[in-house]
Length: 248
Length: 132
Length: 123
Image 1 (cartoon, rainbow over the protein chains, first blue to last red):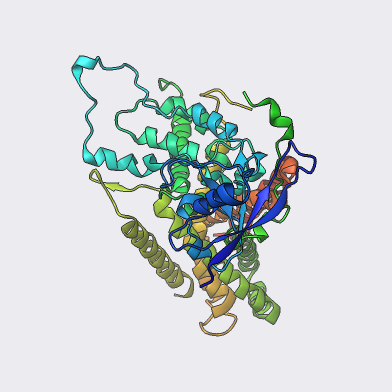
Image 2 (image 1 turned 60 degrees about the vertical axis):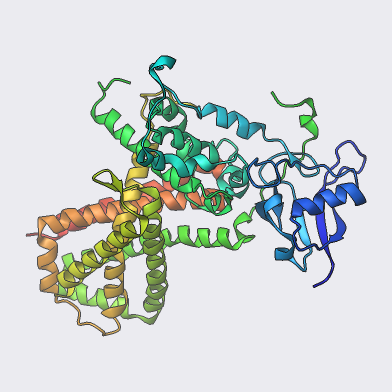
């Protein structure tokens, strides 16, 4: 195998005259244990210090390093050069988000939507601390555990064509996290979250493409979560229609 | 809440034929288009019912029309797409519905087996009903 | 365009019909299409006699089932094609007319099914 590989990196520098975006080629060593992130760090350290990108844990848990690798949303710390050899490897900023500079995108939209679905335990009445913890059986945990694995990396938003076409869509991760709390036996906030989820731009925008689940590096299956949430929302709508006197 | 630099953000436009760029997107489009053939066959069914209502001559005439080579070609394509719809719809069912029996979750493979078994039963009953 | 909780929007009910239509189409249509579209025209199976089909269609349960099947399958196709056209060709801004054509077509087809089954197939 060759001892180097070319990364074609999309650069965007709004503070310069020739802002771009423009693709710049960088030749990096093809090391057996290197991920794309290592290659980017090599570029920044040795070749071009002006390259900007996000990363943190380098082990697939912080969700910072999501980018488009050869057109697919991936974590750069979890995508290895040898799997893409002989290259070249096209590195672009995460799709469906505005680009601030180089490989850095503005994630404000996602952060707002995440807040709107209230991803925390909601109780009608909090138990006093002296009464101890909220107990939960392993079976109750397994009901929602899969959906709790989300690392907020937004690869699912980059993969989702509906989010790309309709920026109002609440999106896979936010809905999956709302569903995670709705399924949590300790939670009593399903009705509250329903006001967001039951909107047209909530669960109903989703057409079950399924690309979000294919892109997810943690196996969350947001597509499945959204369909389950649709069913729950539909059942709620039917009950509201048939039993309008039901307490809210 | 966004930065004052927002005016200089680069907003990537979604290309018109976004679904042609990735195989998974193209497969999704094909899956969705299968519903057009579902509608087509419902229309064929409506014409069949109309023909039966009009009497034996009309019925025979409709069967002849269905035997026309062009119709056979159309229906071969329609069968492929209606089967695509049935298989993709069935395979997505376990992800969309969590089935619990006596408090324990039924594994996806069991749900899928149930769906296909039901399909087999319905097919057998309808075949018997129609062709007798 | 937020709806307050308690105000019913049509989405959940359309989705329930769409889902039911998908199930019905997947269960019922393949065998009927293979029979009437291929097996009978190509002579693999003998065509049922007119009298036999008439007897089957005269049954009120059959009529009800067929109207339901046709209606739900058409709503399913209408709903899906509406979004496919709007997403695939980026015509979301024309949702009003596209939705009217799609669901309107489904309504026309369902009405036709009801007419043929109830008015022309006499007991």
